[in-house]
Length: 166
Image (tube, rainbow, N blue to C red; front, side):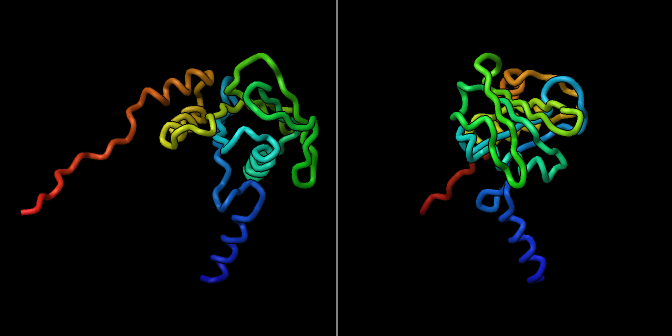
C-alpha cells in the first residue's frame, strides 16, 4: 500500500500538475470540425500555463509542436518556449476569437482548436463548458459553448428548515 501511494504522490509532481492537481483540459475523441476540446487555465500567464498544458497533452498522447493564441487575452511569451526536452513554437494573432487557442501536433501537423474557459470562471460553469466543448460530434463555436454552459441552472442545495430552540 505504501509503495502505491508513493508512486501516486510521485506522479503528482510531474510536469502538467500544479499542487497535485492535473491541468484542466478536455479533448474530443473524434477529429471532426469545430472545437476539439477545452482548456481552463488558472491564469493568463502563458509562461506558466503553456508548459503545463503541453505536459498534460503529452500524457494524453498529443505531442504539441506549435501553439497559437490571441494577443489580447494572454501575457506575451517568446516565440519559442522550452517545454521538457523540446521546443514549442508559439505565435499570436490580433484578430479572431479571444476564447480560442490552436495546438498543432503530430507528424501531419494536425490542428486542434481549444476553447479557453476564462481563468476566473466559476467551477460548475467551467465544467459544463469543458464537457460541451469536448463532446464528440459537436461543432460549436467558443461563444456558443460558453452561452450554452451558462444557460443550464446552477446546482442548487435545497433549503432545509433550521431547528429552533425551545
